[in-house]
Length: 366
Image 1: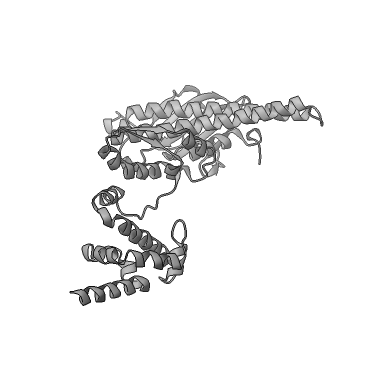
Image 2: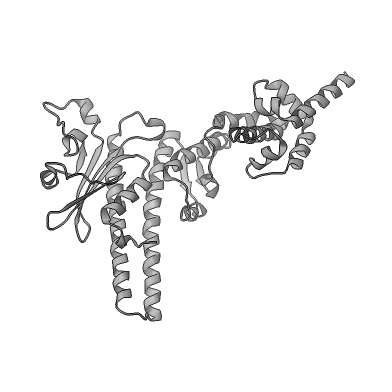
């Protein structure tokens, strides 16, 4: 794995911002060297075209702030005449200039749009201010880490043999590098939490275990915010009913929730109101979701395939045993909710057998 100092600085910064922020749509990271040479990195890779006309003037005279694309060198059609209020709102390119990267000066032009539930709205002024502060902080921390990497390489190059103290110092520097990244990620998570706190009107805190789990989090960052929101939706009603004014995030809240599940708030209310049928209801939901996953893979709806698509997976025998134990309640739920669980209701033989036996039993005692 390459140290950050061996990666072109404009590529390093571009990759980090795109990974850390799901709000990024377009980005131009411009490295300006003392000899006036310019290199540009975009989300798609290196900008191979000739640098846009007027970019040097833009970099030297432009101010950090928010721009419409047409006000930058990256679009030929410039704005003519008075700028309307709507055009002001549409200024979604943040320009950060004159960031010292040791061997060059960085300028960042990044397009940021609202994500999640508000993806069609404009960014609010306080949100824009948060992005300005956070992105500059992220990049500054990242460049400090890059400089640390350079120092490590220089130390290694001084000799073939490192003393124990030198090795200990190198490890300490690498630990600091990791801590800097963790701070940046924690700041990013805090932005998400602040947004969810405001949206749902409840205090959300991070446990130590949650923060530790973030260190090894390897899922796409763009999925993190909607996934956390689903977890919070699930817990919100219970928290309010129990009189709790806050939700504590644990490693469980980083687990992935399928976007194809039914509305999580309604599901939570069902758990509260179903009483003695709750366990059987959740069991049927679990098998229905597994059957849907199996069907999407082109698999037949049998116990083996349903069990392998449960999370965690279960055996065919355990499915049959669970359904037999819950037979009376399964029958009641099928009568109560005729539109639910369509796949296992019509295609899973084990369920059909249970319903048939329970129907006969009820007719015999009628």
